[in-house]
Image 1 (tube, rainbow, N blue to C red):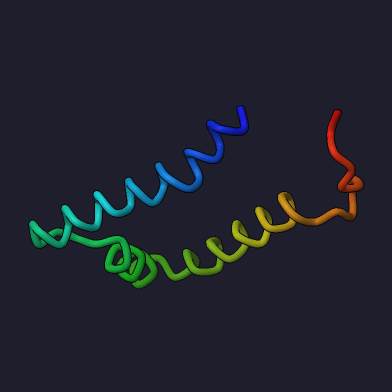
Image 2 (image 1 turned 90 degrees about the vertical axis):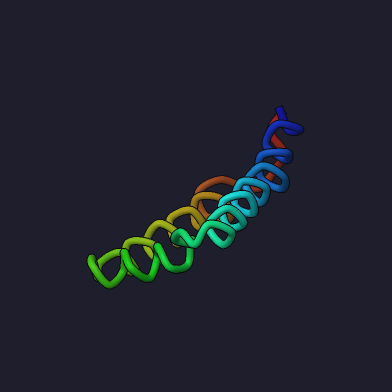
Length: 73
């Protein structure tokens, strides 16, 4: 299962981003950065929500206050 998550994180996410951005730039459609900017302009709480979700994931993935970082057996 480790290969699955490694491929997803380091290959599939960047690949789908690159495909989407290339398609948007070649066809004159909305890029991800323009989409985020427009979304933030139309719904100002989006920036705050993105920050909360980022902080939650950082705590969930890297904060060792709840359990020790001993390897799972």
